Amino acid sequence: MILPGMAKDSVTLVKENGERIEGLKAVVSLRRIVTFHTDIVMESKDMMIRELPDGGKEAYLFLDVMLNDAKDGIPANYQITVRKVVVPE
Image 1 (cartoon, rainbow, N blue to C red):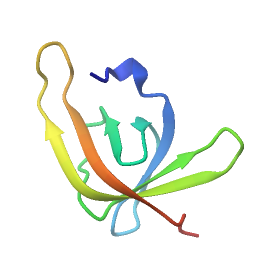
Image 2: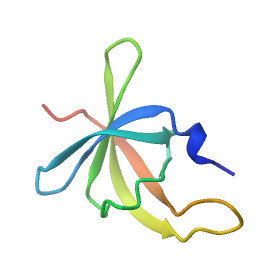
Image 3: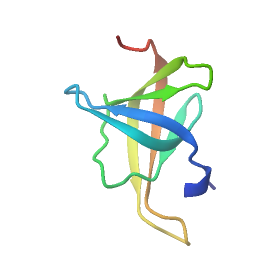
Image 4: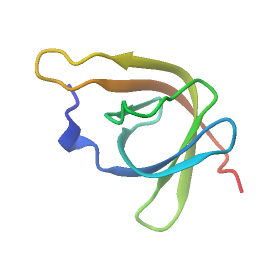
């Protein structure tokens, strides 16, 4: 179970149309991203870019986006199946 306080990765959402939303928090792993920013529409083919502590960046392409309603004390959240890709310039 992932809770909002665990979302410590700083990420930028890049929509398929190129729009960027910076300053989001998420839990990023190799195949899944969890975020509690449910006020933003996230869709397949969007991308998240994670800023690494050493100044590098990692990019993840959204393959499947699942919006979960609040339940059992856990706020609404997105669970996103992703694939790591080359960071766009």
